[in-house]
Image (cartoon, rainbow, N blue to C red):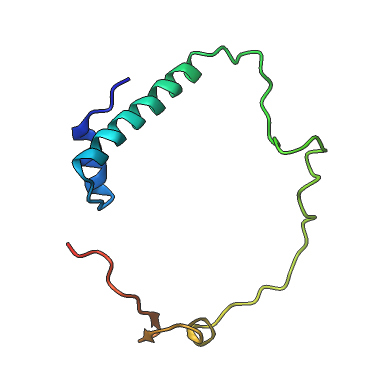
Amino acid sequence: MQFSKEEVRKVAKLANLDLTEAEVERMAHDMGEVLTHMEQLSSLDTSAVEPMTQVLFAAPATASLREDAVREKTLLGTEDALRNSALSGAGHFKVPRVIER
């Protein structure tokens, strides 16, 4: 499947990335390869494959889950939340601007 250079530029713009022409070409090729692979995976017959919920190891379904326990609810106050903040004001975290548009 083809992934056009124009589509790469559109995605790069949405991600606020400046790509060189060589990077655009490489990304178009790479994304095309990914889409081709996804098409191949989509064509596989998985009707006889049983759904899996835990793929890491063979164990009972609850083996990696903690037991449910009721805990006393404690709220973190604004003062405590902002205590280690580098910069705060008016009860809020202050962060540097990252979007320059």
